[in-house]
Length: 253
Ligand SMILES: Nc1ncnc2c1ncn2[C@@H]1O[C@H](COP(=O)(O)OP(=O)(O)O)[C@@H](O)[C@H]1O
Ligand SMILES: [Mg+2]
Image (cartoon, rainbow, N blue to C red; front, side, top):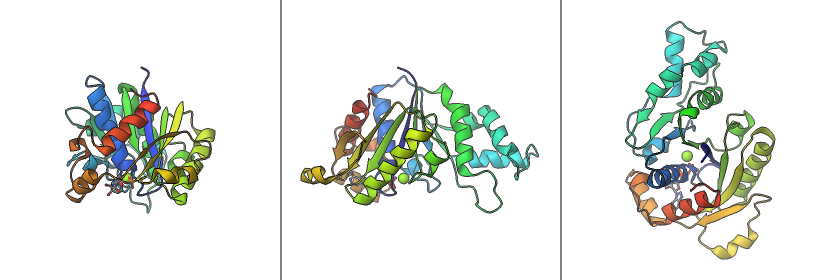
């Protein structure tokens, strides 16, 4: 199979991080030999907790090292260009878990920082993704990263919404912008936390294909309270089964 770059997008709080982490778990199970990279692209972080990772270096840390070493003027675009070239440094920063590599984009201070988190992320995706069979990106809420062409190279766009109108409006907007600015091959929506299938007829996803619905998962809720990892959730649980259906519906199997 060709390389898969799967990005998870949607409104805040709808389940993107849980679903991205479970997608990593599912890929590990289905493809134990594959090279898998998980990227936390949300400055609000969260994927590392969901994946049970405790220590990590961020892309922003690497950018700071480049600037501190006098190799780039922080106010200029240079830092981003160097970041794109420092593939080896970025690979170093990746936490090598047993079964997948992990990279967090970090949280650059807004003031005086030319290199926005999104420019960093775009550089990293082009510099590093080539060495992996599967890249799973847990995106920032909303449409900004699509707008800034961070997700240009994404092959599979997984849009997550809850049953609310606000949620579906965000995925529709993301899809519209992605149609214009990215070259994705496949896209589809997951309606998460959907407990009443009768509501499905009322949900307007526009032209986005519905991949599947996922009901509330009490085992996930309990694990989340304890700060547990999604990787430890049961394989046949509600979230795991739902994410498997979604990936298969997108042709990732
Ligand atoms: N299907 C589900 N069942 C129960 N809780 C869920 C479900 N999906 C997400 N959650 C919970 O909702 C909260 C937000 O989920 P999260 O994955 O962090 O969303 P996002 O990344 O979109 O902000 C978390 O506490 C998560 O455990
Ligand atoms: Mg999140």
